[in-house]
Amino acid sequence: MNDVLEGLERYMNPGLARTYRFMGLHSAEDTAAGAVVVDADGVEYLDCAGGYGVFIQGYRHPRILRAAHEQLDRMPLSSRVLVSPQQVELAQQLAELTPGDLTYSFFCNSGTEAVEAALKIARGSTGRATIISTVGAFHGKTYGSLSVSGRELYQAPFQPLLPDVIHVPYGDLEALGSMMSENVAGVIVEPIQGEGGVIVPPDGYLAGVRRLCDRYGAAFIADEVQTGMGRTGTLFAVDHEGVVPDLLCLAKALGGGVVPIGAVVGRPWVWKLFEENPLIHTSTFGGNPLACRVASEALAVTVDEDLPGRARALGQSFMSELKTLQERHPDLLTDVRGRGLMIGLECRNAGVGGMIMAELFQRHVLAVYTLNNERVIRMIPPLVIEPSQLEQVLDALAQSLEAVEPVKDELL
Ligand code: PLP
Image (cartoon, rainbow, N blue to C red; front, top):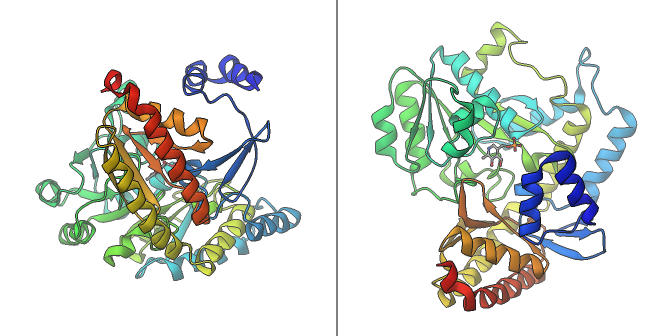
């Protein structure tokens, strides 16, 4: 087992290997099913990190696996000369399931690529340069996405990044309004900031962003890479406010926990860019038949099993139990917040968070902090998780908090 960590250290990322050791994460993953990951020694872990939001339908959902096997046997990658029916079917499904007149899809392989495409489409279709984003946002780590992300730590070594990017405080319509002008190509917003620490904006925020974009002719880009596919209790998080963005970015759970895929879905007015030049933005592997067939099945499973409804129901009881634990340990947990099964536990500081995560791991629960806010431990389990498994998570968390209590003075 330690060989894997040694290999990580020697051949990949020594610093990351040290972090694994520090957290007591010595085990190598081996198999997984539903909400459970099994390590090479056969130890089972309940996964509340869900591959950072990938496993909405759980690991190895039987229907999605079957679709993958069938497509693998038929044609996994595209000739890219003939039309791919799997691509067209997925695009039609997305047009039907996404709100309003979101109609056209471009397919890629990851979240950051979906954001890159959206930024280019916003600029290309408006002929304007400025992109407005939010402080604390996370949109990916390639250059464009990194430029609109909102954390200095990940940006500093790579300056200069994309010019004409403005960051305004998240959830603050007045601040956004003060920066809007006829130079703004697009406003990119996560409906709930995930990596920023599971930040839920005030009611009416998304509708307000929509109004401001309409007033200035800018494209509203909703980054639903993490919030999409039912995570927050509706299929897309913009559905909570009945808002139709101009561009909707998806990835993570679109691939059904089996194959990577990203997508950006757009309204007709922004898609005129592709009419002028159909090859203006392309990707060799983007929207390959295997990924598209799997994504179609993942969407069908999400709808057929009413996973958004499950997120709502399970999220409500889980959140209230978590709040009870917070009340019992106010020095360790300062807030519990979120929507559906996208929940953040805000710890007094990053040290407390690290201790709680390590204790959870000892009790075979996988949980990780949010990338742009180390004080927040995210709870984003697969939506197929059983209520009894959530009970186990709560028991493990209760014990973990008890275990940290005696040493808390050193950490606070
Ligand atoms: N956008 C959001 C909201 C995300 O949460 C993430 C990843 O966590 C990304 C974009 C980037 O996705 P990827 O890691 O697939 O590039």
